[in-house]
Length: 222
Image 1 (tube, rainbow, N blue to C red):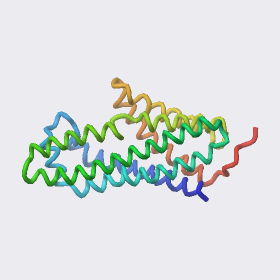
Image 2 (cartoon, rainbow, N blue to C red):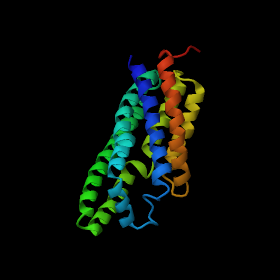
Image 3 (cartoon, one colour):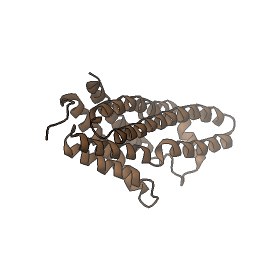
Image 4 (cartoon, helix red, strand yellow):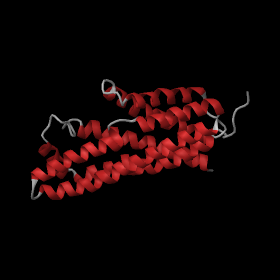
């Protein structure tokens, strides 16, 4: 039963990424929201005008995603627990840490959004300063690099190879996506690796979700 719940959570998590990318490329990208080449006051103005949208976006891509991630991490732990115990436990630890960082990012960003909007009415300079600080802290927690999530999916994929409870193509995809997450810590590769990680994770979420829904959890025979 929990495996099916994990499958639903995986597919729903993939949809949060789809929504996140859609909002970014259709609304935030064209105005260069978050770009350091744009004055912070301009970003604050955009935030004030679109506070409801930004709060909803943060709730979906961070808070909702984090809740779904907890369910998924436990479900895949159960799926690959036939592998080396230390490997599975380490993978699960990184997965839960990542979910916690995502949740913290969403909570921080939404609280800061409310404060920035209020400050902008009386002190634009203070609002711009808070916006800059929020961007840096949020990036450090859950958006600037993807090493925590990358390590989770790499270790989970290795456990999948050992336990043989998921098809090899899914494990290979996990290694590629997770590897991109780890590579996002390198400044020279950060932008490309982060994009590969985000887009690749959408595909990974969906295929893992389907596997959890339709495949029996018992390991395959040799």
